[in-house]
Image (tube, rainbow, N blue to C red; front, side, top):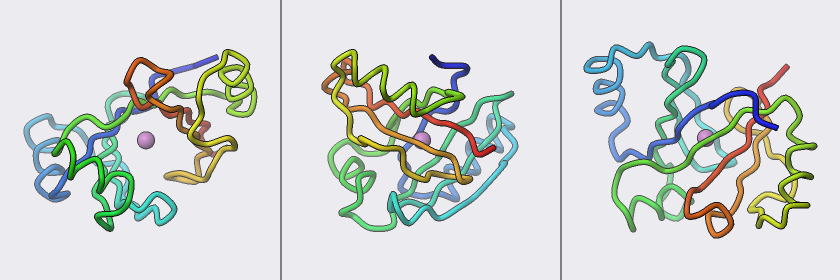
Length: 134
Ligand code: CO
């Protein structure tokens, strides 16, 4: 069902500081920066081979990431698995009885199609499915 580890999402309070950490200390190339209004975040992708780290800074405190930061502080927010067919993947996890946050895919960063699964059905790990734009 999954073809790759697509990215890990990291919630940050200061995007420039986080970029400096990942590009400087870890030497990861910055691949992309985008405001994703639908998710209420400014996001940055850094390359790790074929995978990415996705830095997420909330646009407002009442966004999902804003609430996460208020509750937990900065840190690991979600994991994202890549799939070539997100509709089939969603059908499969739905059939397996998993609780979905997104019943249908939404448009995510770089025009990908994404859907989140509820942490209650994934052992506490906020999990995202990603189908890259073709
Ligand atoms: Co993500």
